[in-house]
Length: 348
Length: 282
Image (cartoon, rainbow over all chains, first blue to last red; front, top):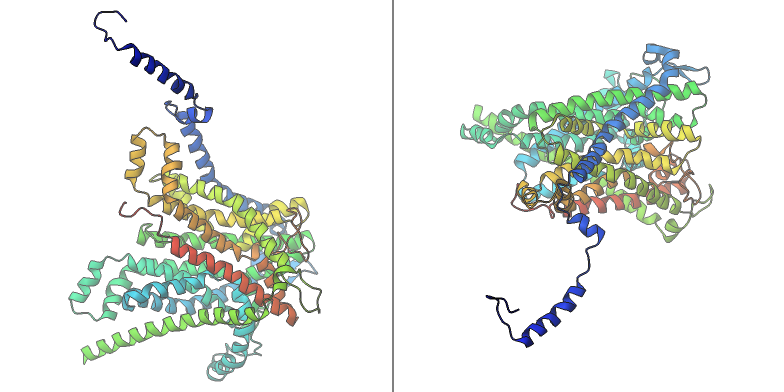
């Protein structure tokens, strides 16, 4: 305290100061383990590496899921593949009692119902997309877009329930006789009409895939640059001509992609189709006839399949469905990505 | 006159477009309206508190199916949401521009389109066949597999809306990358991520096909994960294709409850979808 250059403070202030600091020193506790870990000034390499490893494991789980499904399906359908080979997909007899299985009627049912559904849904979806993008006033756009997307949120089993009690009587009593009277000459509407059958299943499938096609077409059409539209209008085109020349022509690859995506959805649709397609493994020219699809035969017969060969045949059908939908969806996603470059607004 | 023909074509297409929109909205209104009408008349307190009555008896309810659905969906969320969010974090934070990121994104999109019955089949072969009995656990796993790709894509898209400036500011302050991701990116995007999870939840809540031969359905109360369990969409399917009027009535009521749950989630998603994103930053 008596060193040269040091400040001589009055004794009272010094003692107050020393008294004042002691309680404060006592009040500071050493930081807890967690806090000291979080505040550590290390490079954090270990923690960073662990976190990255955890995230990449989660990301690779998606591959794992695909590989798992594929391997499990292949292993369990080996029995059926050895027994039937490629004849499985060309034979039309499905006889669980004698152990003879052939999937041709199901392939026929799936392909015809999906193609019919796409034919019915695509014009509607394109017209609604055009309406929402070009013709609809701005204040109405949000509500109507929301309503069309609400169609996508309704579960498949509720579509089936509605179809059984409302759609089937309409098709049987009102639409069927009209079709038979005016279009019976085509030979597509022969036979007895019970309401359940290929046509009803196609109608309900069309309603179900409509939101998919519509929303992706809308994304694709929105991605067309506005200069293209303005250029067409500046040259004196009417609104329809502008849509045809600028929007549809530029977006056609993406629209094709959205149609294929809708087709992929229709191929795999199970519950609503099971409830209204009649479930009869037969190939018939009439659209009123009951049929079966790949997904509906699995839904109906899987939990009651007796015997390893029966189960294996059904799993082989599931494997075929898996591979076909992966290929179809892959092609569709590539087409849509090529046009929008990944700038879609939703993960449909 | 050519210009007359052109303007006539224009008006025709406009009329066609308006007509198609009306035609499309008709089934939607018809389904929801009829569901409301038929379902509301069959809903009563017994529906929510009783298990199904024997065939031919009046009354009964679907209480076990509602609870069973809750159990299966809870299990599916527990398994699927963390994995999905982790994959989405990888794609958004570490995978941008890399080949692995592109491939995983593409695979997730393709997996979204796989039919749900194939997922159920895989869960059957993996779990049910090995254990030799149906179980709620298998149903939960099947639904979790379906949730993962959807949650991955929505998490990635929500994380992409967090501006890079915010991340760079955190990194510039010396915060390690893992801490930045958790405390800055995920926290900013959390409303969007939560809505993405709700969307996936609403989607699998209505799925029936994967549960047909994994959870299988149960007529009694069951909370055991190793036993078959009832589920609401499954019960609706079984009752709808049955020949009994009483069961049809219950199917309509169950459908109304199911769609009310899903519509509420979808509407909440719509309301909160844009609330959480940082405004004005990209």
